[in-house]
Length: 305
Image (cartoon, rainbow, N blue to C red; front, side):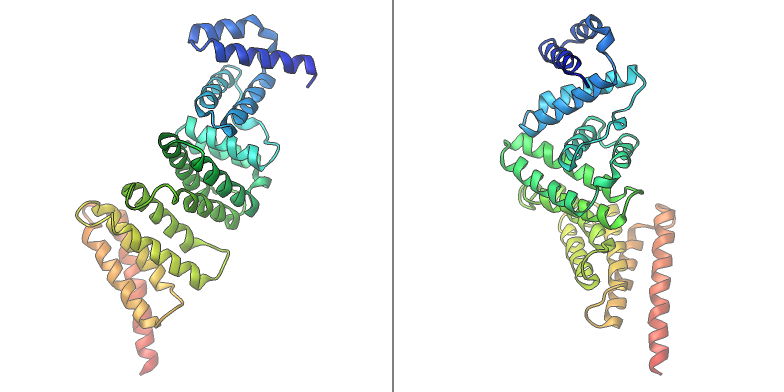
């Protein structure tokens, strides 16, 4: 990209930041029609990334919104642009996650476009960025950042492409990082949701020792039950018990029969809420899980006779 064109892009962006109304935006863009192209959209995203890194989230969000609208007019997508490094990808992914309220249809193509950057190093970059950003922000900004990280972590946890081992590490890094803000005392609901998501991530984790990952998953699920009680969050309470049944059935530590008995108890708890009439799919899943555990218990008893 030549220097003159880039300077015009910067001039247009500066005018957009000065003229924030819709009519003034249109006037600014119409003044330089030959420069309203993919290069301008890409430059707007890069400038938004810079503002976000400086803590100017409102300006960054405005530019991403304007870039999104311009991309739509040009029949482009923000996901058409490749990030230069992991930090750029992180900022761009978070901006898009926030702008689209976590739309997989928008975030996933961006991740796919930059899939080679999604590795364990990206997890470290994410965790460090979140900790620094939260510590340097006021309460409202920190809450906003943590909420966006939570949404992004859920998205990457379920991302169907790339290497599952890396996706899970990135998700865990995000959840662990926002724990510094979303504590049980101050944000019980957000804390419980994060514990639940961490339980799922540790239960599926590929890195590390299986036995330790399962213990962490159990701890996270049991922590979430402090808030997601049967009385206040019956559906979530039952879901957690079903997941506890899963991890206890695969538990490596302690006595195997005792673990299977605990798994049965958790599945039976889940079935108290996930009935066939109210939640047929969840009921069927819990019934299958309970049957499988009971079969294992029967086989172990038979092997002892």
